[in-house]
Length: 186
Image 1 (tube, one colour):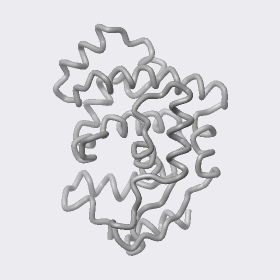
Image 2 (spheres, rainbow, N blue to C red):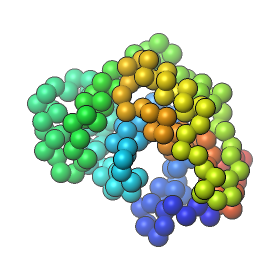
Image 3 (tube, rainbow, N blue to C red):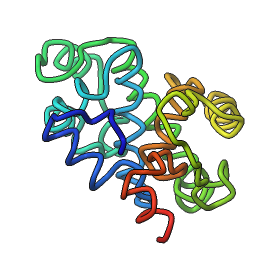
C-alpha cells in the first residue's frame, strides 16, 4: 500500500480518487500545475488543505481570468491567509497562465502538448517501496526544460515529476497498492 497518505482522510481520498489518474482536461491540468508549483518546498498535505482557498483566490484556476490579474490582485493574494502567500509563486502563476494559453492555442489543447513528454500514455512503474520512487526522471527533465523555454516559472524537474505523478502521466502507486493495478488496467 502507498504509505504517504498516512491516516489523514483528505490525503487518503486524494490518493484513492485523483493521484495518478490520467488527466486530460486542460483546466484541471492547469490547476495541478499551479498547486504543484505552490507545493515547492512544502508538503502536499499543506497544499491540499488550502486547495479550495486557492480555487477561490485564483478564479477557479481559469488561466484566461488569471492573466488579467494586476498588482492589486497580487497584493490581495498576499493578504489571503487561506493560501500560501509567496509573491514569487503568485507572480509565476500569473505568468504561467499566459504561457499555458499560448501553448494551448499552438497545440489545440495543453493536454496534447504536455502528454508528449511521456509518449501520450502513462508510464507504469513497478515500485515495491517508497525508496525506489524517483524525485525526477528524464521525462520530467525534458518537460522542465521545454516549459522554461516557453517562459514558465516554478517548473523545475522535481515539480514536473510531482505533476506527472498527480496527473497520471506516471503510475507511481506501489505494486501492492490496489490503485496501481486499477490504473494500469485503464
